Amino acid sequence: IIVQEMLDTKQLVTGPLNESKLRSLPEMTDSTKKEAMAFLEEMLRCSYQIQSIHLPLLACRMVRISLKYGWTKSSCVGLASLALSLVTVFSDFSEGYSLAKTSMSIAGSDKRVLCSIMTITYGMINIWKEPIQAILPQLKDVYNMSLKYGLIDNALVTGMLHAYRAFFTGSLLKPFSKEVALFMRNNSERHKRKLMHLSVLPVSNGISFLCGRSGPQIAEEFITEEHLAEALQNKE
Image (cartoon, rainbow, N blue to C red; front, side, top):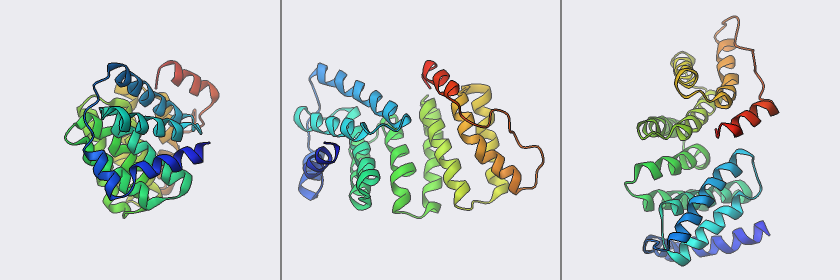
């Protein structure tokens, strides 16, 4: 069902003619559909966090609603999520890359919407098509932009994506270690997202070992079910 839904939706949005149709869609006016799209966007985030197989279906549903009833801010996130699904499910890197660029173009100058889309695009899609040296600065920009507009959760996700991609692609350890330390300190002192702290802790420990430092942070090194339950309760 998931594969067929994705194939059918892909035919509706890919190709020059369909991309042109996406760009010319009117603004959504049905308030009920707008609320449904906002709800589906929240479901998308939850599905990603728990690695649910339903994420592609949610993305397809959002795109189909947008095609029928018009465009809303959540539509861009749905389109970017469909692009991510094409990459992760079909390994269709070219179509996913193209669709992600379309979603960013449609979002225009709305910085808050762009933050969510750019996190998906630069952190999860463009890594398959562009040099990592071109992507890491973009992720840092998204992180700072998200903080500026109060999108703390998006900022922390982007910071985590940047940390892992920079670590595993051989970034210079000295400046990178300062960035990770600042990220973790800001999270601990200001944002207080324990799950995000634990997610980045292995990178911090890896830097410590590679730099020859003694006594890396080992307390609470692994994310447990209790941590996940606490994060869910705190809406992390």
